Figure 1 (cartoon, helix red, strand yellow):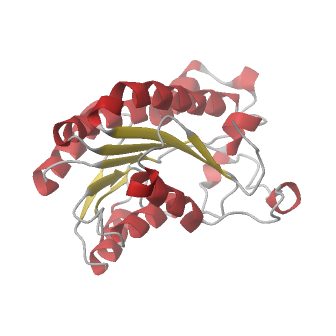
Figure 2 (cartoon, rainbow, N blue to C red; figure 1 turned 180 degrees about the vertical axis):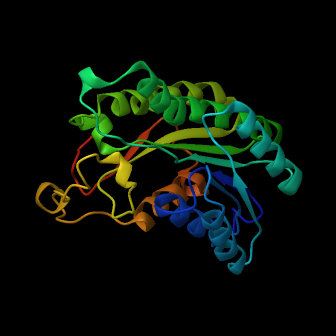
Length: 251
């Protein structure tokens, strides 16, 4: 397997898309750094699932919005595995709030997790890739970033920053054989934080809005990640891959 022995740092990999991606890459022989902000039980459980697939796992609690925490996580990965080959910046929050009610503190909080966190993780992981002359970076956005999201202007703004980051880094890192891309999932059947929805988790409109007539599955996003980090995806960089059942026919 071409990916055997590589190491992937996947933020927010204690559940949902992050967990599915960790298991998908583990099946390709990739060692996994499993990350969550505070839930030790989740990262430990995913790490055990990864190890059961015959590769190594390092569960690490780290707040991606805190540079020192990210640097510590990366240092642990380098000590354990000798470097980081793949970064998948997956962690995000998606609270609803009318734009005119978004406070400065709320905006800074959103930006720090989605965009600042991606920058911190990239600056911590990419040096290993440059040293090895090979690397893969993926940022997760979402269909609302491109379609717009009612009461999510702050979230969409931060996530659109990831697209700009990916395009610029793709150019800067190309001489080092490092690709940088974005995956934009549509409505995915995942477990959400109730606090994201002050009025309760809304009924999914995916079945009526999505041309394929269903929500997606975490494994389908994980499969897109597998493609982009594989040899088959080596000529793809600076792109946004929309995986949304036709909900957004994107650019």
